[in-house]
Image 1: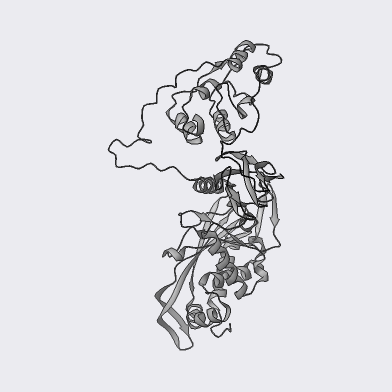
Image 2: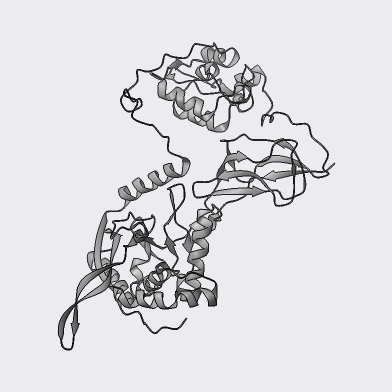
Length: 451
């Protein structure tokens, strides 16, 4: 009976680890080639891991919420289809003896006692002295929060076989009054490693206004993983780049009339719905070619000028979160090519089907706030880029038109464009000129353009 290791796949050049979100298949389940076995997440995108072979799941080596390095085996598949009785997933490493634990934690020399929080012994990768498994995620949280091995052993767990889950340890941290400090002289460390004393959990902290609603009229919702990443990314951008935002108002009457005239024929001929986004993207690409210093990033005191024009388009997901798929080589695409790319990437983004490389290497970003009915916005720069443009809703407004017979007031289709840019390297002249050039290209759109 042959066995095949299922390896944690490489999800991009900068991705070194991934978190297991959900095991779709369990021990004993049959799998087909390319059938999804589990769902994983990186700091950029969620993905499904398919089976490379046909067979039966024999072993699951990591649990949900575990963080696993790229290239490590995460499951074993029997390829001859022999039935396997379902059983709990085994620990990654066999339980170490007390002597081995002692060797891991006893320092070679300690000139004088130092007061530090006791680290969790490496033996806890598999099982502690009470036989309970601790995942890498739980151990990392414990280390970051200065939770001692004794506290971890005494902690109540809601997972399989009483294991401590991420939610258990985060709830413990929230209710914890203070991190206990253990004096780790050689003898005391040995005692902790050999026979940790189960101490009762500390009493819950007194509830504060930020965590509990006295009236019951407040609901506390924990951020999901993607929302936390977005929050960190936005804060980092504001700390990194001094933001400046410029605005222009654009008359897009000819553009709107052309799209209304050709949209039915365009879909029948090419099988694609044409929206305003690819038309705006086309104008953005032309303006970047005119002002290449808007297509840069900053590395210390150096400006990195990008020769490729890779335009990201901010896409709202059904969950309410935001993702930015990237159209690579946008300057090499026709309007039809841009339309196909926009529709394809947006559709797969909403179904969580994007590949990691499809949200990387952007050099400029467009966000269409007009899809929400907003007339303008002040977007936050998508690092490490230096500029992001927002397109507002197109609305009918009275506008002054200059003619050879004098000025007249007419109803026109008007739209606001706004550009947020990094004032470290993009001055008002460059940012304002670039934005005005995008507007000029949109206003000069050929109403007789063929499809």
